[in-house]
Length: 456
Figure 1: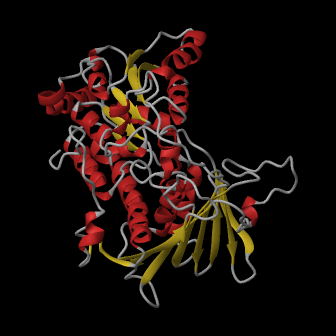
Figure 2: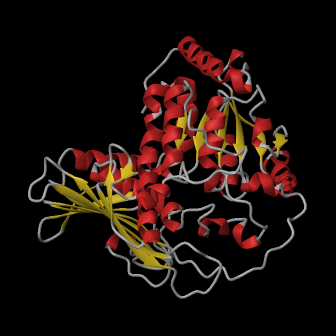
Figure 3: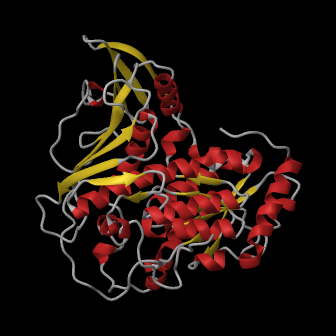
């Protein structure tokens, strides 16, 4: 995944990175130490933020040295349960990411904020000379993703995208099998995100809770009154902050669908769906079907490939035996349960492949006889830390570029859905063809001073 550098070589890379960001943020001297200890700050400590904290704490010579969150109410419990009770040194606490990034003792950050903060937090951190791991989706729109990729190329720091399945032997072996022709010509890839999600109901606007820095929480998003249905977790279902379930759970399956199909950006996109059954505060779809068309000059027939993505929120079938349980006690695999079917199907001229997070299985020929299979989980957090110690940013940071391509599919599909029509896309210019209305949705108006810069 990464090429090797000597420690002296890494020190040189880190010094170059810090110098590049010094004009805005100052420099970091943490790597002047004699050991390989990495000091990480976790930004966003609710929900998945706790998983990040625990995962870094489990790694050798890694300190979770700081926590940052706009909700001060979370600090006491997190510090007590995740640090004090474990006999670990208490972390520094910040509510403003800008103050955190001035801390010269922090080597790396892990960004676990709502989606609308991901790209800006990552770009600011990169400019500060910090190594960055940013949760999926790495951007809230296409413009932000392009700027994030530019920043990752410009500054010599490690930048990791949150597509965790790329760290798994399961996904890697599946991609290798397909790339080497195991299924013949691969022409169709599907992402499945069937998660049982109930209504969020309706809630009135309310006073900002004590201890919540709401202006910081809004960040780049438009100024709106506080509402609990636009705050913790339910922000996922509001366009100002989230990207619906295709950009939440679904982006993992979108990434695998794109990777296994061997494509980057599409030439056509069409999406339709709706917010069915519930009259509530959600404004993203809970059922969505998106289709993407890609050129395939080496293929037979119409010289194209298709990626199909589906989000379903309620009653659904399983699609393949991979998601079946033989009995109530049978091991079902990660993200497979009585409620959920999360994974991928890939179709080729020799057969098809079904994939969960843990495992993949092929079915070959017209009789669909079981064929080659694989599996295995990796450690995404360890890969990030290993890259900081030994990685070459120019090689490793292809991670964030791949993450952006996947995010772009999510954003293009959502734009097609919101406009209610098919769209033609230029993958080189990264713009829609002859469609000013659609192109305007590739970015957003940013609320100062929380502006994603045009020049990084």
